[in-house]
Length: 305
Image (cartoon, rainbow, N blue to C red; front, side):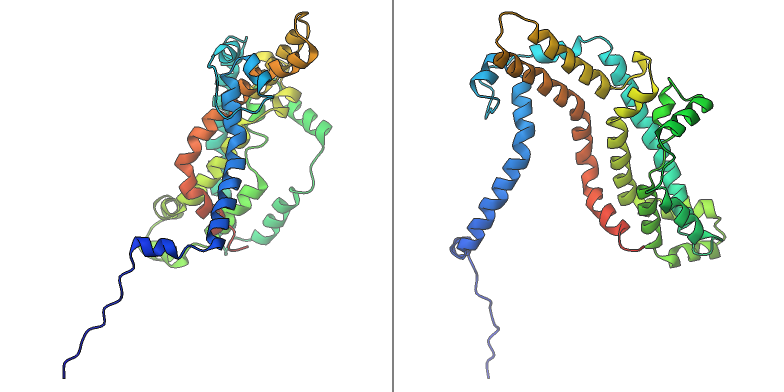
């Protein structure tokens, strides 16, 4: 008796295309429209930032492509007083603040994840309370003045070095790690710092990348803190300087007699777009290097409470 092996029918690419249903087409269209709606606002800002004022006026602020390219708006931004010094301040606050926050959040989250730590539940509850209760603006100001943080860059780093939400996210991530790995290292004579450095941290890159993005974006966007606690303009961040720049450009254009009020309001859009691109471009350039860890870090860190 001759047995014939079963051969699965080959499905060509052309036949697969015939199986595309109307529902698939609708899904593709909806996803494409959603992607365009999320991407277009920033693309429009980029086009406005390199367009002269008459182009923006003619298009009513909605550009699909730049009809004429000019970099006068960026020259206005680059030549504004104190802009590069504020950029340096922002980079310092972002790098130092993010690094310090990562170290403290990692150490704090790892400590709170130790099941044999005395008073672990009470400490977690006390930390959790700070998410809803604060000391208030005036007591906080007096506290920072007594500590000597006013008119320094450290006022944007030390007080907000640890975020309660990020600390608990780190704790949850460490709680979800295998205890067998750490116990085997203890049996081989490894100390607690060695276990943290050699085993825990290499396995924690997703959550560390997630925290780096959270803290980095928060530090880069510092606006209210330097306004409230730094009266020295040389200690302001790029966000504060760009806001002042935009306000000055609006006032300057409104004082020009040869522009109507409608043209004046549109003319400021080019400067506004250039300032937005100038302020957000560094974060956008960093995100692709962290995004592969971002979703995994958030999901894994939220598994256990």
